[in-house]
Image (cartoon, rainbow, N blue to C red):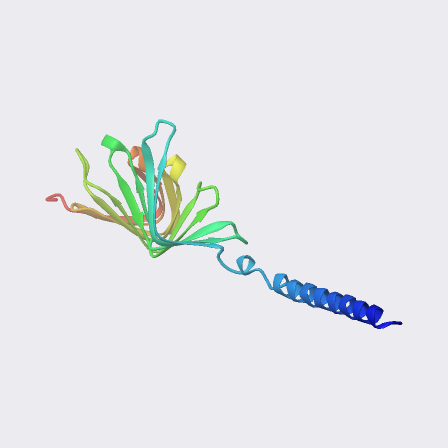
Length: 187
């Protein structure tokens, strides 16, 4: 072997070693666990979402201090969520809590941890304040439900129940069981 062949063989061997080293390091970089599979892959602060119908009018409004998308369950977790129905002359309902989640398709909103629901006063209707520990809201249907204890207050009455179904669109509440109340005729 002459010197020229030895140099060429050395350069070729060095190239093979360098390529192998790069491939090994690239494999180590891409082989790292995907953080999105174990935690949120999307984070938003100060979320403000307004959902409109085909008519272009806002049907409901959802706000939260923060939102995280959790890919393994394909859900959105919310901190300090506030959900509002927009119903024009029929009034407005709002529900807030410390924690919440929204399904990926947006059809279901779960509110939990100190849920406060309020029907704002309007023509011919009193303001209602409702407290419970969790609430399942179906925004498209303008309904909500809970199987937990509920306390409903207005300036004229206080009612307690276990379980409630709410129809926000028609301003109706269905109390399920163990209903007790106190009415103040002066209010």
